[in-house]
Length: 206
Ligand code: GAR
Image (cartoon, rainbow, N blue to C red; front, side):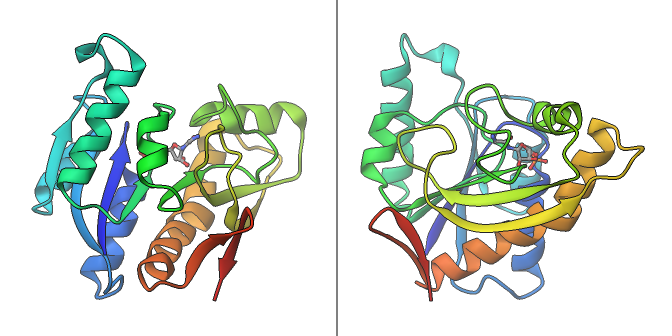
């Protein structure tokens, strides 16, 4: 399957996918492009280093949100993408993309959904919210993307312990290492093998 990865930042989740591929895994996944809304996203460098097309698509180039998402959809359709992976993509996907790729978009989120998710909950902020609330366990979630923010069917979750001296940065790193970089390659591998799909609003895993 042809896979596109959408990013906005450092791209360590993208790197986890590329590492899995380069180690001989993800046999049914071909990474065809990486799209970023931010020019300086280091994820674009990671794509180039791995011979993958890197596309910079800033929102300011478009008059409105609808036009941005039509352009994004067309980039993905032109490349005959089968699966879209949101790996730290901080633009909420618009209807044109969601409708064209129903059941074929997955996202990684750095908490145990439905905790610490939804509008405004992204990146380091998620870990700040978890520490502020004083929860003892957090984690990460891979889920299908629907029309809402972090509301789609859940595929995998993994819990991560919170330790007394954690700062948001320390916790973010632990959640990535112990959960995100494991769950995302696993989900992409299983989806591209045809072993995960949506049925009756739930993720079915075979
Ligand atoms: C990751 O922690 C990812 O889960 C999070 O952004 C970070 C991107 O890091 N995504 C969200 O918060 C989405 N709501 P990366 O660029 O190093 O992969």
